[in-house]
Length: 510
Ligand code: DLZ
Ligand code: SF4
Image 1 (cartoon, rainbow, N blue to C red):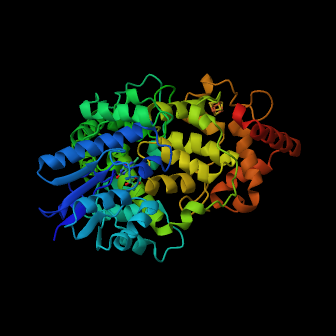
Image 2: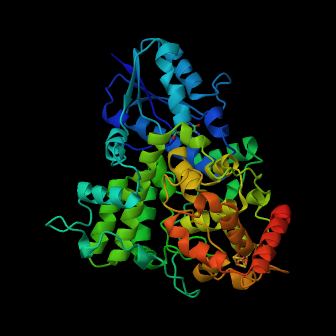
Image 3: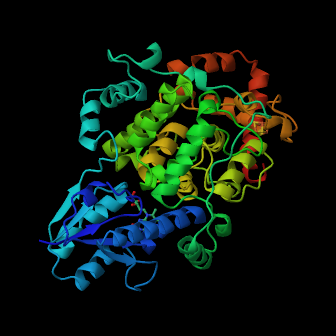
């Protein structure tokens, strides 16, 4: 019996479970819909990437002689949501007798899909998304009897399971599971870098750029500067380019930041992976191969593979385990409004301006910008997690809630009370000075904690610890920081508190 097979905008993988199960009479549905395009104010490059990659993917399916219904944006005025799109497709094809879909990536949409059997009086078959290495039940099993979830232990299981970077007698390559400590060098400004591959828009992409310019004119970013890959072929080229030119140094400089260098040695491929243009196993195998061929060192190969089979799978597992409550967590009762400069980049703080400008220009900033600059600032100033998580979900081309929410709410904001991270990633200007050359290019003085032109991160950092001493004072990993705070003279502490209060009052002007 022929079925309606729904492919979502982040399911653009030829080998996805729904397409592997396709029968010749099945009809595929893909739709650009308002409800997905508007649930946050997505960056224009994210919209162009998804719509254009969807159109390219549909064209390939049609070339393979599959029957495809493709609804472009507002083509059918009554189609506003995925549910409307399914209703439209079923109306056109009354002979279809069931609906099939690979499980989607967000709780919000999963709830919508769960209503389809009743709404359409048809059976719904939901298949596992086995593009991920660890299934949702497999993760739940791993988490079942644990008090605490720590990525490191999960990661070791994933290494054993995939056999990536494992010796023949099942030991980690190089005798250690994790070379994290060899991933934290600061970067000399003159070090040779090769920028990521960029792609000229073809006719399909140019049409989408025009659409986004017209219909999403107030969204972040300049549509005309879009240069991402929109096909699997180009995404693979971009990734192999990264392995050839950048990966060797990625290990050392994973956490480094430099003025006007948004990419450094990062792959800039997470957006391709998260919409399905790249396959996680293939990427890891290519990286492992480069290590065995001797073209990249172990700290680079292990560091990269840890991000994919460790961190990425871990946050996805936690997301599904904890939703829907997870989204409402706010342990530190943070409630301050997001300053306007998160949208404009208009701030004197050089580190924030750099992280935000890269976000605005490229719908991208790397993990230390996200965690230790914009995230750290949001943590220290007590910004409302709901506003902060919506912002991250909107502005990054790789952001889907399964990955963005745990990373922002749990890792950056510590709003989940330590489910994800064993301590808040709070840091003063000293960390930013060590890992970047921003402070030498900033009107604020990173050496000052209070007084004129003192770096805002310094007083905010101590004040954050002081404000939350009841909740955080017992955290083993913060003992050194609390000792330093308690060793400060009372009048110094008062001056810091006062400076932090003034800083919080003039947040918009920083
Ligand atoms: C993010 C996104 C956007 C902007 N637009 C669409 C769309 O028009 N059609 C579609 O099928 N998917 C879109 N997506 C991706 C979905 O939001 C994504 O499948 C869910 O967030 C689940 O991860
Ligand atoms: Fe950021 Fe402070 Fe350094 Fe300026 S001085 S770049 S605000 S850490």
